[in-house]
Image 1 (cartoon, rainbow, N blue to C red):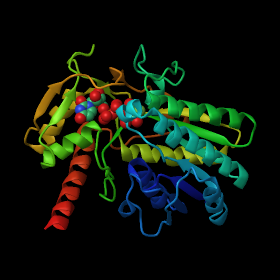
Image 2: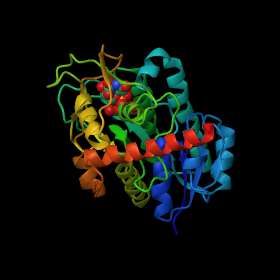
Image 3: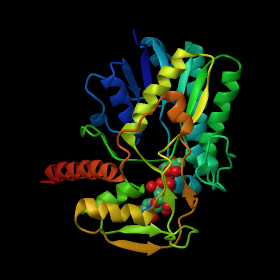
Length: 335
Ligand code: UFG
């Protein structure tokens, strides 16, 4: 029978989609989330949600033992690149230091498998795209460093045989559960598609385009947008691989290997939505590399990952219908 999986940050955006993927596949799941950015509503009622901080090692040891956790998917953390530039100390505490505490609790409780949410930000501003996993890791913002340091910690601990781990380096995660059960919540949204969808439903007046003078065809940054449901499916495969071969650890990029510019995303959103969102062209934002596109051969070959929602229109539609639903809910609460 399947061991119980602890999902940290399981009430957050990506974590909740992983919870749904595990839940749909019949895995016993328990969620730990401090609800700083997550929401109870996106976690299925049948899944226990413990409101605790992963940095609290004693509390985490208790959770791991009580629920007889067999493996951890570790999503909890902060993810906003510009925020990490203005408050690096917070990022190292909330990402690196908290992961260190969680790892300690896992080792004491005898949990031997850990799947870690890492990021393309570990590569910094790569010289060539697509980026493969052997590319140099030279982050250009504290967020990337906070994740890379955690990867290093996991690598060194795994070398002792205490655990095995998978580091999944996400490119730009977007979209929402195709069944409408979860999506991006988050107050003070900063991610491009989220912001653009908020503008499309009328929650904000416009979208700022941060930088039009990058060395790219249309001058705006290029990213590899991956549907959150395809990413969640990759997590289940990665988890199975960790459990199947406890001697093997791995690092995989998670993206489609396709680059889309900021302006191209906005154009596609307009097409899906039917009415254009207002763009305000402006200066660059701190910490943004011009291009991030994944080489995903390892993920595809080693895990047999088969994306189902790669079409950009599909990604945008799911994000937009989630945003419309949120908007209606908020309107109902205000009425
Ligand atoms: N952008 C805008 N206007 C906005 C928001 C974003 O022009 O209102 C631009 C950004 O400048 C950037 C692109 O859209 O060029 C994507 O920005 P996001 O904020 O959506 O995402 P990031 O690329 O900054 O970061 C995301 C995740 C990170 C991850 C990274 C890896 O937040 O965790 O993707 O590619 F590391």
